[in-house]
Length: 61
Image 1: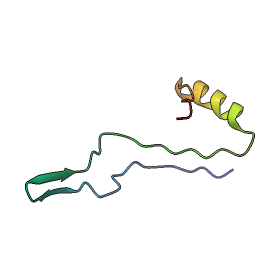
Image 2 (image 1 turned 135 degrees about the vertical axis):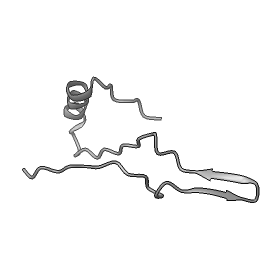
Image 3 (image 1 turned 180 degrees about the vertical axis):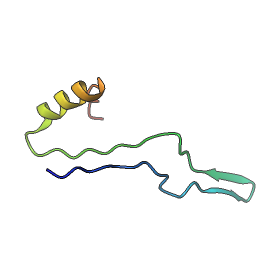
Image 4 (image 1 turned 45 degrees about the vertical axis):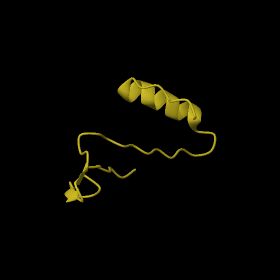
C-alpha cells in the first residue's frame, strides 16, 4: 500500500478581512477531520481510533 502524507493547511489561505465593520478571520488553530469507512467497517474504525489516538467514536447527531 502506498504511503500517503497529509499536511495541514488553512482552507482559505489564512483569510483576514474587515467588511463593513465586521472581521472575517479564518481559524487555523483548529483541525477538521473527515473519515470515510467502507460499509461494515465501523468496528475496525473504532479500534483504529482507540489504538492510534486513544479517541472514541462520536455518537451520531
